[in-house]
Length: 187
Image 1 (cartoon, rainbow, N blue to C red):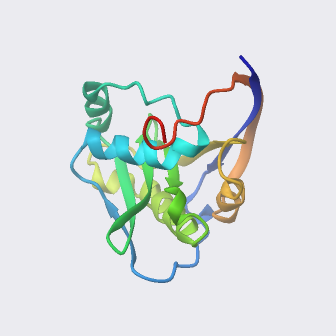
Image 2: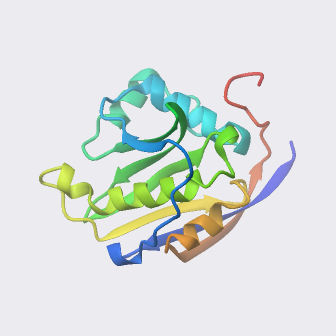
């Protein structure tokens, strides 16, 4: 089996003032929170956004595991819709002591390159900063972080930097090259 060199960059913001706005995309683009935990919908977003860039770690999750994850207090999924069609999503995963991870972020392939990504990232990051307002008992957010890697889209890192994220760690590892799964088996 062949291997692939993958660079992973970790980025963070440590103040809401770090967040830089994005230009709003043209047309009817809305970002809405998916308030009902739905393993089917979350798996659809995960597989459809990550299928061509080798997101594989959750493909084997059972329905029960998806539900357990999505029902954790503070986990939020924010979905961008272009004229009513899901275009991409941001998944927030709160940790301890006011730390919120942007666990997943991306667009379905047909919606890339249309300025939706910057808008969605800015909106999702703002929701990470005000997460405690929607979840009584959670500590106020003190840090928002994420990671991206060399398998992600060509403009991912630039988008994160333009939204005010700063690099704090870089790792280079060898991975087994896996086939690109696509949004469904055989795609």
